[in-house]
Every structure is written in structure tokens, then in C-alpha cells.
Image 1 (tube, rainbow, N blue to C red):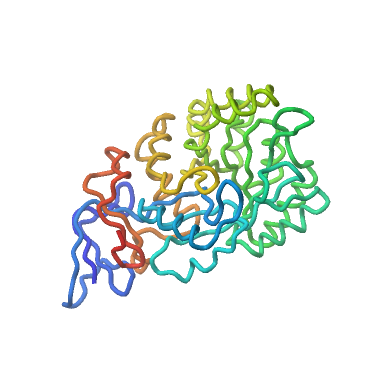
Image 2: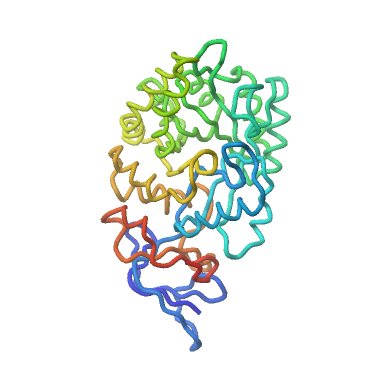
Length: 357
């Protein structure tokens, strides 16, 4: 048995003195006597990375041992629930591991032909979009991932990838099959069509403007800003300057207003969740940095924390530290509500009731 004693943050304001873990599950009822390991500190439900990629690196799919290291890196950072926002690798074997984070998969990215990173996505044309969305809806865990915009080499800039009618039909099919749809979007052009077509979430969403933010808010469309990834835009722009100067200038503008964009969306009531985009060019285990970035954008500390803990779990339909839930939790020496930088230094990580880090 495990006894967690100190301050258990069941919710931002629901604070209890202790919990017990029996048979790998949370209980607030003191069990019968037995061997007990006690952990002390401030306990949170396992953190959530709402946008990462296990089984993927900058070049495409990776071997299982590399995917395992990615998952372990997230776990040791206290990130115990991952929404995998697109991967070409089969990572179902992770579900059989009691010591690794739980994953909610979106299947493989679906992109327009030659309009995304090589080896990442199904690259198709609009006539095939509905069929591929149906395929990935059946393969995933309730999510499908589209690539909504990418650089158009003829235009020399970011442009929308899909006609309005194609995304309307594709999103309707995903919803019919019980899956939600999200899309990678950096620029402005694709956002209105995607939202009006019924999309559930947009990744990055750097192209939000005063015209589209109210639309997102009124439809309840969530965003996952991935600010630790957006920080790389200047470097990307420098690399593409000679060949695509319009694209480079556009990326720099999106980067320059990133914090204002996120704060304006939050102030308007757009649901904001924490995600890192780990697994492409970025390392895993960066959720503490992402939450800190959200506070830099002006989101209050407790709300930024909740975007990676309580609200995130509710959004993804996974329990926190409630009676009978799997005992996935992280313990800290200090109160992370007072200073989110505490998230970078967990003192204990518990997965399925076992102390693993």
C-alpha cells in the first residue's frame, strides 16, 4: 500500500490531507493494517501533455526502444497522460506497460500531398480525405489529426491545405464514428473554414486574430498553443529565408505576437490546454516549461496549471485523484499553485500505484 500525506490537490481548491493507494487505485478510506510506503508533499494528478508524439522523431517513425525512452522521459517529468497528436508508429504495446504513461492516440497525421514533413503523414488529395479520416478514427483513441496548413512552395508561404467542402465532410464522418478532430494550423487562412466545419481543437493556433478568436470562443473550439515549439519559429525562418522569404517573414510575425495571441484567446473564453509538440524536433519531458510559457503569456498561474492537470484530464475524459481512479500522481516539495516552476522538480512519480521516480 502507498500512503500519500501532506496536501493532495484533488482540484485547485479541493485540498485533502492524505490519500491511500490500494491495488493500484486511489482511495480516501483508510485501509486495514498492512505494509505501507509513505510519500509526503504536495500531490497532483499526473500531468497531461495534450500535444506530443511518441514513436516519432525529426525523420519519421522510430524503433520501439527509442519510443520507450521518449515515454520514460515524459514519465520522469511527471507527465502521465499523453495525447499523441499524430504518429506513424504503432505504440499500442505501451498500453501493456504498467510503468509508462497512458496515451490517447490520434492515429497518423493526414496531410495534403507534399504539404508536410516527409515520412510523418498520409499524404493524400481532398477526394480521399473522408476515407482516411474514417480509417484513423477507427485506429485512434477518439481523435483524428489533420494538417490544416503548411508551406505552399508555389505561393512561397503558408496556405490552407483543404477545400471547405472536404473538411466539412471529413469532420462529419469523424464525429459519426465518435472521434474528435484537431488540426495543425500556423497561419490565419484555414481557421474560419475549419471551425465552421465543426472542428474540435486547433494545434498551435498562432494565426488567431481578433476576427477568429470570437468564433473559437462561441463554438467552444479548444487550442493547444505549444509555445515551447513556437519559440523555434525564428530559427526556422532563418533557415528558409533564402528560398521562401515571404514564409520566413510570416513565421517571424506569428512568433512576435505569440503571447498576445494566447492571452487574447484566453481572455475571450477559448479553452487553452498545455502541450509541447515533443517528439518531432523537440525533446520530451518539457511540460513544466510549457506551463511556465503559458504564464508568460498572461494566463494566471492556477489556470495555466489546470491546463496541464485538472481541466486537461476532464477535457480528455480521464480521471484525476478521485475515489477508485488509477493512482497516477506526482508529488512536489512545494505548492505548484504558488509557483508553476515547481513542476520542473517532482520529488516522486507514481504510476498505477507504484513509485517509479
